[in-house]
Length: 540
Image (tube, rainbow, N blue to C red; front, side):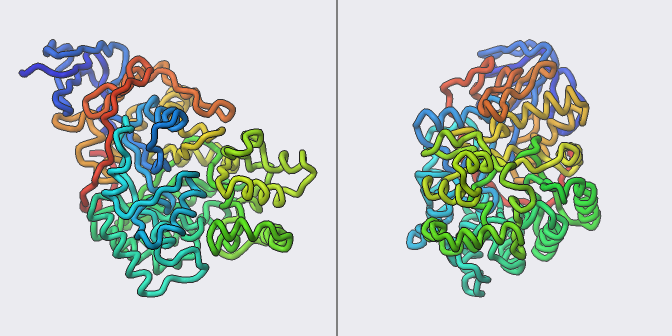
């Protein structure tokens, strides 16, 4: 056999299928895997002793918001390292209905407002998937695949108007989606609690999901409600996928707010029934009881009906603030009322670049310190930050998190929002937390099952045909970790603290993490995904 570039010898292999660990050597030649018998002695340019360690495929994070993390500044570099240090070799971005493409140049304004409120400045927008891929440059160490955001399509065609799309507008959105999917985008995403996606009717989403189905790519949804109306929101998602003939991926599945705690017993059973009825359905989850999103999402959708700039002007009006207060108490039909279901004391500022002293503190405490009403404080903070405020929402129950994580239908995600300040620790900790806390310490699921949820299962779901398995000829994306030592280091107070126990990460056959330290090698790229025939997810 020809000389290998790299070989890991003496370790236990978990190949991603869910099969038990077995001894084997794992070699790399020209960016591809070569599986070998244990202690094969095959010559290689570099030999790594993996005795006592586990070798797995690189992890796939199916839900991130790292669309605009390109750039050379120090903060972005620190943020880019966080998933890599826990073994994530591929990220799926463009989730929750927000992607920076496809944006017709003449309609860039509304989309840039949407992107700025989500990602912060600079709010780049790209005409096409290839343009977005080219703009990522040479900064990446791991790979990126991208969904097309329904909110972006709607902002580009309809704007933020609180109305249904016309047939012609729906046709234009479908055309933009079709072009992006044909060029290599990985699927369609919606965020039906966020403006402007919240304004769409079910029929509009069905039309778009049909386009995704025609390309053999999934419909990925942040449900219209994850709180008290989560079950009806899930029914809508199942209706959309069924009518469109598309695969369905329920994003970061949760039942949040006290009135919904425990509902995962019913929602998971409903997903099981849908699968038994022939629907290609799966979900993902992050292993924490707090969520994270934009502060804008805590306000009723009418507030942002005319875009972010108009919203910032409107919330200066005391009458508008009074109406917001009334709607937080009484609710708005079709709107997930996070504050009304929990309270401002559960909403913690994660990122407010111009107000760093606010980061890490709740809106309730910040308002009390100023002797202000929480709505007034939130509106003033949004104005000071031009809408760019990210929050944490402590709203889930641990029993529900564990129930979803243990389900055979569930993959793992971080839902990472990589921004400065005090971001959610899930960006730096999700995968290590599952391997250490939920597998080793709690015993919630076997290690082989956890690795399957992080590798082969998501690779199949998103059509990444040569990833997710340790098999001859597959892309050489690898993680080597110590199963007795691996653990998350990130906390709510120190959200970017690195994990422990992850010894080596390989992307495209090149070492990007060595002995827990990130190297200067940057082999990552944006992956163009070809279509596939939908198939029920599961083990090979």
